[in-house]
Image (tube, rainbow, N blue to C red; front, side):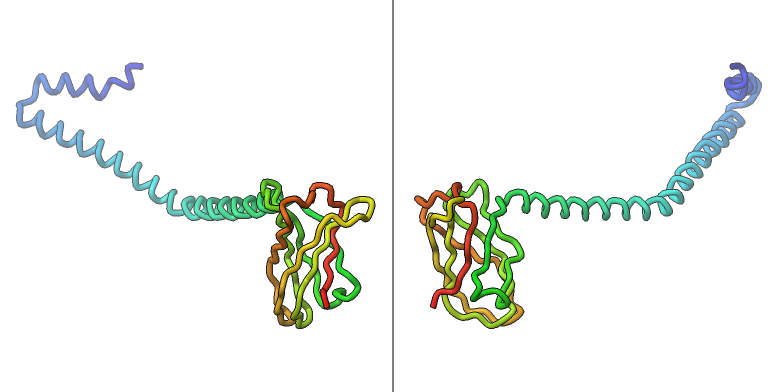
Length: 175
């Protein structure tokens, strides 16, 4: 315990014997030593941060990427997935990459991500059916698409259409 206070005790004893000028010089040296020690400590921290900071930045970047992935998954979870079947006339012309309706959307929209493999100009017809194959409603949408086009297409059913009873949908081309 005395080891810790020995320099201070020595300074007190010396200061009793030293002139005021010598005391100031000693105090200045002690202050410079403390400042130099702290400066080296800070410099060491800075050097460590140079190396570790790069790693930390990479970790933060990865974390931000995971946030965006989570947002996309959240978008997928906000869609109520629906079973959409293509009619025989549309098979090969296009495919449905994703189909759903927003669970909080009361406007009876069904959204399809349509991928067009061939030119398609005309009217798409989406029909909703219940589990007993009874039609619940239908909606038309005009499209003019080229091969290799893809987009989200919204089909807005009448608000009275009971889409919560729909077991599946059929997408067809109206002649």
